[in-house]
Length: 127
Image 1 (cartoon, rainbow, N blue to C red):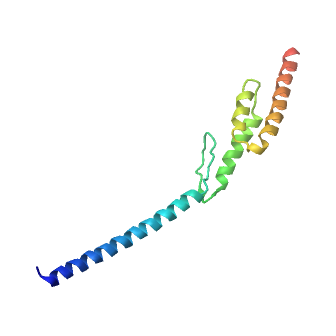
Image 2 (cartoon, rainbow, N blue to C red):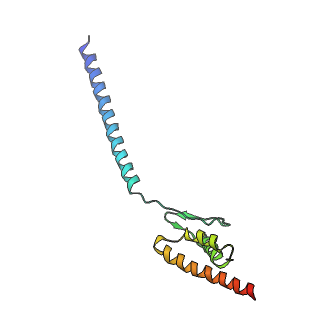
Image 3 (cartoon, one colour):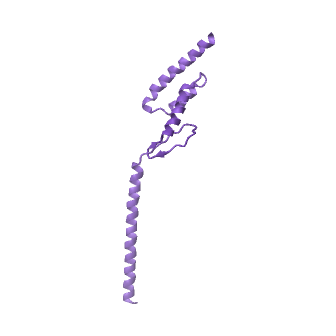
């Protein structure tokens, strides 16, 4: 055995080991950073009307004006274009979009409007 060759082999193994340790340390740090990022990331939910006719752009946490127009038209249609036969379904659809803090109040107001609509229908039918 040649001592010089053996020393060279040991040095190359030591170099490879240091390189491997550096790569392992880097991967551990990146894994920790990705885990922290995933745990602190806020989820953004984009609600869409059932049908849309315009292209909607989402940039970061903001949507463009086309989305507001589409949603406004859909909500207005659901509120204003009600009949005694469809009002229950329309109220269910709208309550899915209402913020939880105002859900109860909105549900009560819509129940009053539904009752008013059905009473109006009865009065018109009886005349």
